[in-house]
Amino acid sequence: MERHIGIYPGTFDPVHAGHIAFATQAMRECKLDEIYFLPEPRPRNKPNAGEIGERARLLEYELAKSAGLRVFCPLSEQYTTKETLPELSNEFENTKFTMLVGSDVFKNIADWNDVEILLGGIDIAVGLRGHDTADDIHAIAQKTKKKLGIEMNYKIIHTPKTRHISSSQVRNKHS
Image (cartoon, rainbow, N blue to C red; front, side, top):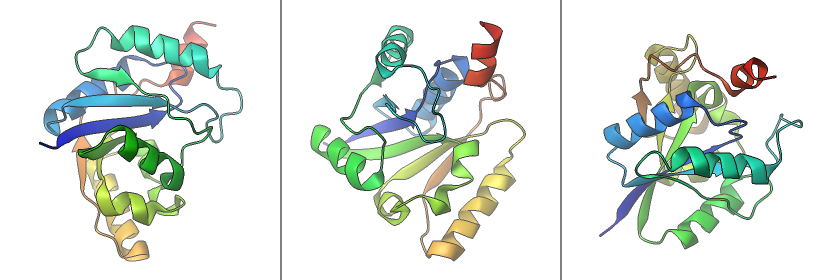
Protein backbone atom coordinates (compact mmCIF):
# COMPACT_ATOMS: atom_id res chain seq x y z
CA MET A 1 0.00 0.00 0.00
CA GLU A 2 1.37 3.38 -1.00
CA ARG A 3 1.91 5.97 1.70
CA HIS A 4 1.05 9.59 1.07
CA ILE A 5 3.35 12.01 2.84
CA GLY A 6 3.86 15.74 2.77
CA ILE A 7 7.27 17.31 2.38
CA TYR A 8 7.60 20.82 3.71
CA PRO A 9 10.95 22.42 2.83
CA GLY A 10 11.89 25.76 4.33
CA THR A 11 14.17 27.75 6.55
CA PHE A 12 12.06 27.51 9.73
CA ASP A 13 14.08 30.22 11.47
CA PRO A 14 12.21 29.79 13.76
CA VAL A 15 9.31 27.42 13.25
CA HIS A 16 6.09 29.11 14.40
CA ALA A 17 2.34 28.55 14.82
CA GLY A 18 1.69 29.44 11.18
CA HIS A 19 3.94 26.64 9.91
CA ILE A 20 2.31 24.11 12.21
CA ALA A 21 -1.26 25.27 11.48
CA PHE A 22 -0.62 25.06 7.73
CA ALA A 23 0.93 21.58 8.02
CA THR A 24 -1.87 20.28 10.24
CA GLN A 25 -4.57 21.63 7.93
CA ALA A 26 -2.78 20.30 4.84
CA MET A 27 -2.52 16.88 6.49
CA ARG A 28 -6.29 16.80 6.94
CA GLU A 29 -7.29 18.25 3.57
CA CYS A 30 -4.78 16.31 1.47
CA LYS A 31 -5.28 13.11 3.50
CA LEU A 32 -1.58 12.79 4.25
CA ASP A 33 -0.25 10.01 6.48
CA GLU A 34 2.43 12.33 7.88
CA ILE A 35 4.40 15.44 7.00
CA TYR A 36 8.18 15.83 7.04
CA PHE A 37 9.58 19.31 7.59
CA LEU A 38 12.86 19.69 5.69
CA PRO A 39 14.90 22.54 7.19
CA GLU A 40 17.30 23.68 4.48
CA PRO A 41 20.91 23.91 5.71
CA ARG A 42 21.85 26.82 3.43
CA PRO A 43 18.63 28.54 2.34
CA ARG A 44 18.60 30.68 -0.79
CA ASN A 45 18.37 34.42 -0.22
CA LYS A 46 18.74 34.00 3.55
CA PRO A 47 22.46 34.26 4.31
CA ASN A 48 21.82 35.08 7.98
CA ALA A 49 19.72 32.01 8.75
CA GLY A 50 20.42 30.36 12.08
CA GLU A 51 22.61 27.28 12.35
CA ILE A 52 20.90 24.18 10.89
CA GLY A 53 21.44 22.04 13.99
CA GLU A 54 19.66 24.55 16.21
CA ARG A 55 16.80 25.02 13.74
CA ALA A 56 16.37 21.24 13.44
CA ARG A 57 16.39 20.79 17.24
CA LEU A 58 13.74 23.48 17.68
CA LEU A 59 11.66 21.88 14.93
CA GLU A 60 11.88 18.45 16.58
CA TYR A 61 10.85 19.94 19.93
CA GLU A 62 7.87 21.83 18.48
CA LEU A 63 6.69 19.04 16.19
CA ALA A 64 6.76 16.46 18.99
CA LYS A 65 3.57 18.15 20.22
CA SER A 66 1.69 17.33 16.98
CA ALA A 67 0.80 13.87 15.71
CA GLY A 68 2.15 13.04 12.28
CA LEU A 69 4.61 15.95 11.98
CA ARG A 70 8.28 14.97 11.72
CA VAL A 71 11.69 16.39 10.78
CA PHE A 72 13.86 15.01 7.99
CA CYS A 73 17.24 16.49 7.14
CA PRO A 74 18.38 15.39 3.68
CA LEU A 75 22.08 15.45 2.89
CA SER A 76 21.97 18.38 0.44
CA GLU A 77 23.18 21.84 1.47
CA GLN A 78 20.52 23.42 -0.73
CA TYR A 79 17.45 21.56 -1.88
CA THR A 80 17.01 21.02 -5.58
CA THR A 81 14.59 18.90 -7.53
CA LYS A 82 17.40 16.93 -9.21
CA GLU A 83 19.18 16.06 -5.94
CA THR A 84 16.56 16.13 -3.20
CA LEU A 85 13.66 14.39 -4.93
CA PRO A 86 15.64 11.18 -5.66
CA GLU A 87 16.94 11.24 -2.09
CA LEU A 88 13.39 11.46 -0.75
CA SER A 89 12.20 8.73 -3.13
CA ASN A 90 14.98 6.42 -1.90
CA GLU A 91 14.25 7.20 1.75
CA PHE A 92 10.49 6.83 1.41
CA GLU A 93 9.84 3.97 -1.02
CA ASN A 94 6.30 3.39 -2.33
CA THR A 95 5.29 6.91 -1.39
CA LYS A 96 3.20 9.56 -3.06
CA PHE A 97 4.45 13.06 -2.20
CA THR A 98 2.67 16.35 -1.72
CA MET A 99 4.94 19.36 -1.31
CA LEU A 100 3.80 22.12 1.05
CA VAL A 101 4.68 25.70 0.15
CA GLY A 102 3.47 29.12 1.15
CA SER A 103 1.85 31.32 -1.48
CA ASP A 104 4.87 33.63 -1.26
CA VAL A 105 7.09 30.76 -2.48
CA PHE A 106 4.51 29.50 -4.99
CA LYS A 107 4.59 32.84 -6.82
CA ASN A 108 7.97 31.94 -8.37
CA ILE A 109 7.41 28.24 -9.01
CA ALA A 110 7.61 28.59 -12.81
CA ASP A 111 11.20 29.87 -12.44
CA TRP A 112 12.51 27.01 -10.29
CA ASN A 113 15.26 24.87 -11.79
CA ASP A 114 13.93 21.54 -13.07
CA VAL A 115 10.39 22.37 -11.94
CA GLU A 116 9.07 20.16 -14.76
CA ILE A 117 10.37 17.10 -12.89
CA LEU A 118 8.71 18.25 -9.69
CA LEU A 119 5.35 19.14 -11.21
CA GLY A 120 5.28 15.95 -13.24
CA GLY A 121 4.89 13.75 -10.19
CA ILE A 122 4.18 15.72 -7.05
CA ASP A 123 1.05 17.48 -5.85
CA ILE A 124 1.39 20.91 -4.25
CA ALA A 125 -0.41 22.18 -1.14
CA VAL A 126 -0.33 25.98 -1.15
CA GLY A 127 -0.85 27.83 2.11
CA LEU A 128 -2.19 31.35 1.66
CA ARG A 129 0.10 33.98 3.19
CA GLY A 130 -0.46 37.66 3.84
CA HIS A 131 -2.99 39.16 1.48
CA ASP A 132 -2.71 36.48 -1.22
CA THR A 133 -6.01 35.00 -2.43
CA ALA A 134 -7.15 31.78 -4.04
CA ASP A 135 -7.60 33.74 -7.28
CA ASP A 136 -3.92 34.75 -7.11
CA ILE A 137 -2.90 31.09 -6.82
CA HIS A 138 -5.13 30.02 -9.71
CA ALA A 139 -3.64 32.79 -11.88
CA ILE A 140 -0.08 31.68 -11.04
CA ALA A 141 -0.99 28.07 -11.89
CA GLN A 142 -2.44 29.15 -15.23
CA LYS A 143 0.61 31.31 -16.00
CA THR A 144 2.89 28.37 -15.12
CA LYS A 145 0.86 26.05 -17.36
CA LYS A 146 1.10 28.52 -20.23
CA LYS A 147 4.86 29.03 -19.74
CA LEU A 148 5.85 25.39 -19.19
CA GLY A 149 2.99 23.45 -20.73
CA ILE A 150 2.48 21.55 -17.48
CA GLU A 151 -0.80 21.09 -15.65
CA MET A 152 -0.06 21.06 -11.93
CA ASN A 153 -2.08 19.38 -9.24
CA TYR A 154 -2.47 21.79 -6.35
CA LYS A 155 -4.74 22.42 -3.41
CA ILE A 156 -5.13 25.72 -1.62
CA ILE A 157 -4.98 25.46 2.16
CA HIS A 158 -6.67 28.14 4.26
CA THR A 159 -5.36 28.93 7.75
CA PRO A 160 -6.93 32.36 8.38
CA LYS A 161 -5.80 32.79 12.00
CA THR A 162 -2.10 32.30 11.20
CA ARG A 163 -1.66 33.45 7.59
CA HIS A 164 -0.01 36.74 8.62
CA ILE A 165 2.63 35.19 10.93
CA SER A 166 6.21 35.13 9.65
CA SER A 167 9.51 33.89 11.08
CA SER A 168 11.01 37.39 10.77
CA GLN A 169 8.17 38.78 12.91
CA VAL A 170 8.80 36.09 15.53
CA ARG A 171 12.56 36.79 15.51
CA ASN A 172 12.03 40.55 15.80
CA LYS A 173 9.57 40.11 18.65
CA HIS A 174 12.10 38.09 20.65
CA SER A 175 15.21 40.20 19.93
